[in-house]
Length: 573
Image (tube, rainbow, N blue to C red; front, side):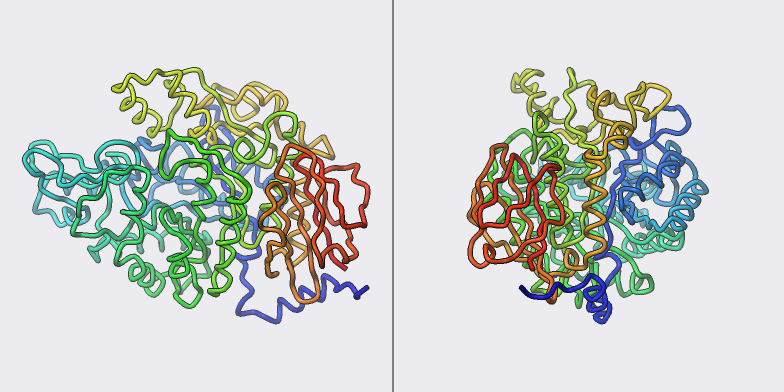
């Protein structure tokens, strides 16, 4: 039996590699949807004071970076992602002074804040666009993409991600403006250097407020093919046409050179359309662009590509293939973000786990996966207590513009509301946007008044208050898993190897740093599984570090009797 390396020795080894050691690699990110996190003033809408009041809760989970979804002034056509003024806080959330107080209080508690910044488009209500549409000769006209229609039709057949044509005609004109998303989210012309400088000034404004970086919303779309060619009308592959434009890397390198090199920041790209072939160009350290991007193929594994209505069955072999593929970023001196959900996707428990009998076990298993993988883990609010999808009875109850646009289109094809709702129950973004479930009190303890969106009825038995009282709860398991990651550099800087990529129900992988080796075994099935360790792992002595079942008896042989959704983390000695 070889000697066990101490945690202190591992930490010293990592500390000696300062060029590789980064705070944003070691952090755990907690993403907040402010509108639904905590209401402090009784208007039914979450706000900064609500977040501030819950900073100790977030810290107790173990997160040390907060990622706030868009907080800027907006008409809310797309719930905050259609920006009217980048330097003004939406009044629903508070004031600029409230935000500054949040940043400062978070800093004192050891929490950094990054902001979700939409940089591909503005609202049609932004002063730039208002000037552009009122005067064709305004310098702001060139802040956006315009093109003349042809024979009373749009300039080309580009489709919007949010249903319908991606061009909208300006009243009283033959000119059309481009919008890859909602018609109130008009695409910025990044080819105009003045636009880029405007965005850099906006970013500097917030960085000087003490934030630690940005999640760049829509970053893969900022560069356009200005030939604006028609494409095959195939809504499942829109990102193929729109992402990774010819100048995108030039713009990101310029952003670093003119701004970001002055700050120690965490830059996360929302990378729809970015795959492993081009991801190293975005995140390889020597290119000086971003620190990490989202692996969208994992987030979209259960749906036909860019098809809101479709649902496809996925299997663990696909899941592992995607994870293993993205982990090869390490070969490019690059880093990864690891997540299973956010505000744009349904609840991870409902997609990858079991809402019913095995809710607790599957939620804990998924937590184990997120916190033992290679890359920076992103936790989304409510996943740490096992929040799940919601089922509203009417389309009118949903707030998402995507849902409303899709339903209006499908009604023309005689699709019934009940049939449409079945798709929304599975795929709708509002599944992740329901108010946070703090307690079993009225409105789930989120607000004293009726909330902006109905709470999930299961708040009566799924809430923070009850989870905190139960030593074996999902919440307390998250805390254990985060602590384990934080004290052991192997989970951050260690090599990653999938030891059994073709097993259909078990995901088993090794993390290794120096002389320390850790084995993670995850049963992704609701059925018991007898898993036999392959050579050489069956000959290791194993010390159990973490398990999501409390009555686990130690098994020293090569056969592991895994219960439904069981997760085990071993140190190999």
